[in-house]
Length: 197
Image (cartoon, rainbow, N blue to C red):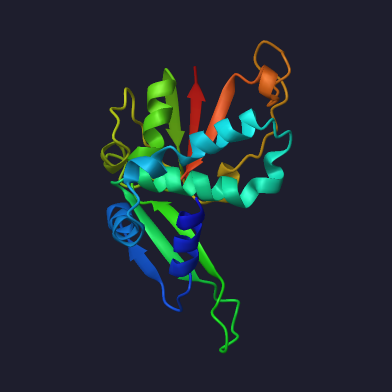
């Protein structure tokens, strides 16, 4: 991890934005450090195992290391639909020193994020006020809808009714507490997704 963190520090010494695929990023790591993809793939798991072995009660002190191991695992796990973005921070304007940099692993394929939701839950309801054209989204998100409906709506004031629902139709209080939750929400690309399992 020391060599990997030094590599990341080296890559963050830039004044321009770099965008590359995870495969290209990993090739550069391999040519610079002779570090294999497989070694990076299990970094997060190995750190968690080490923390458990050392009986670390509070790993929040190691938060930067946890994030670094998670980044190493993610960048070596996902090769398609992602980009590694190294971006200098616009806020630091000192011309004599290098700017602070941010390293992102951005998901560019919505179906990657949607796949675990569709496979885990029996019924998924996707709603949005901005989905247009409607038939394009099943292809983008890679799923087959059972029912698809588009409802016309005007922008007049009478069509909006804000409601707060505290009880269900059986008069049982609705709660979002973890132990009482029956309905979970996922916000993804401006889409509200309700999942019922």
